[in-house]
Image (cartoon, rainbow, N blue to C red; front, side, top):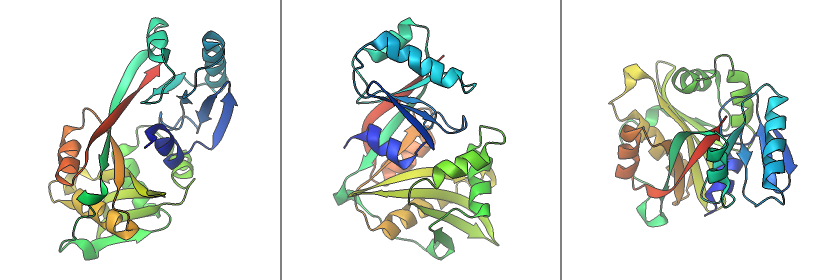
Length: 237
């Protein structure tokens, strides 16, 4: 699998500009994933390409961010480190092979709502957990809905306690936006949402991304048949 492109396609920036084989992505500054350089090909002039990226983000009032994944241009990470770019948010890419899923449902399944678009309650729960960007919810929703996806939530009395997003991508499924309200944790709701999404999609193969520091989530995903496949990180200055 080309994880760099899968993640890029599942979380699309609404402004994209090509430069010398690189893709400069911008989405209102909301999430590094949609506001970073996807540098998959060696540029003809590395120094010039980095300067162009810095000008692109500087002109939008943002720090310059590079996504450095499995397919990053050779030598890029070392050059960015030499220039003072900080390494942040090391992330695991975990995959589940076809033979490992999807898993059977449980008694809580009837409380899971799945729609083709995020509704207000879904958005509010996701943003309450993952909203690191102040008033950026509108931009985040625009990114979320940039490609076809399914949105799931475990609801009680009309309140979304746990949510997730699934993006069909050929013969695999990308799992994103997994979030559970703090007061609803340790009830197995994230597992319920994850299983509901994968069964709804009908795709045995799936992948997801989770930060290295989120060990609790990694434990959950491993118990659902996901295993570490690759890593990526960002360089920021």
